[in-house]
Image 1: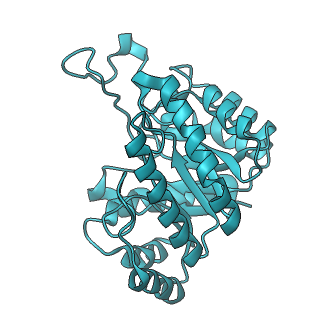
Image 2 (image 1 turned 120 degrees about the vertical axis):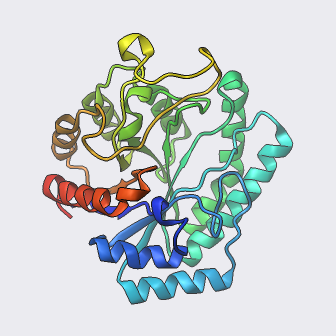
Length: 290
């Protein structure tokens, strides 16, 4: 049985974080995964939440019946710049305090760093992991890593190697469906990637939204100007608005008996947010149960 969570990112501009829990309840969700926002933990910034904010979220949990299941902070803890890395580790320490106050025991995050200085970034990531290890273990919080476009590690196999190399039970892996073609350099072999993570005992979370294969059609599925610019484009579309092999994804998750968190993370379609999120919940409930 999986826990299906809503990433309420498309509602952050129109309501408070606490109110997104009520929105999740309205849509039929029992859980939320709180991604970066100004009130709580913005990308690469020190978390701004205080005791009053945490109290408000706890009251919203009680009133709505929706649980904050996971957090999805993004901190540049693999930065080649040592001062920046230290600042991001400080951000992590505060985030873990806040997660503990909310009784959140699973966090998903990214490797970050600089893909143009991948070796140095990898060294910095290990250094940050070593410094934060006592804090994760103190609070009993599990961390699930995802390879992300433009991070120092973008490919599934390499990311799983890094996770396994730390050799700690609390460090796991998150498979991100909209990144399927970045994770596989265009191959799109979701079944193999899901199976390898599950076989390693590391598959703890799955992000659900759709995306297109940036490698097909001479790499022109979507266009960057100027050509060769040092950027990476990807999408988090509604299921069906892309090329993720969903039948393969769902059948493989069932076969490996996945029982972790499945987070709906559709971005950039605010005008259809309710429709898309409700449709995703219905599909996930049908395919994986709840």
